[in-house]
View 1 (tube, rainbow, N blue to C red):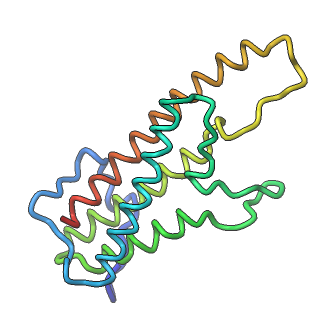
View 2: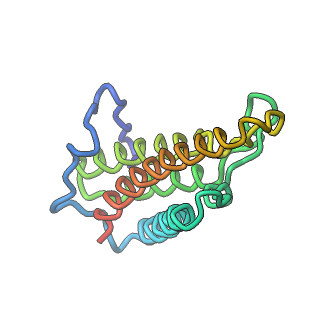
Length: 171
């Protein structure tokens, strides 16, 4: 948010992705911070898109690296995911470079959506190791993994849709 402005809460701005129209709204392209944020968001988008392509090629591909999945210690994450940290910073920089309050509100809402969707991807049970104790259910586990991969692909596609909408403000 820009100086003195406070981001709206989800209750104050309950719009969905489909309700947000970037037509005619742009961030200040001359802002070095906004340019850097847009470039970083594009790099993250490419990284996520690469995971989708890898899964399409091989449903068993380990795409955890694409999402910088951080190992857990007990119930708490050891450290903040670096991609989420960068997304939050980039969204804040883009919102600060917004030309008006409506554009800033759009970018802040899209930022909440893109971070929430990234968390949904990271919570996917595709990233959980299957139990090897029950070998008679191996085929069932393989079939279940394929269904989970399809679900993960859907989550990734939604994330890409949100990221692409944010990037429309940067063109």
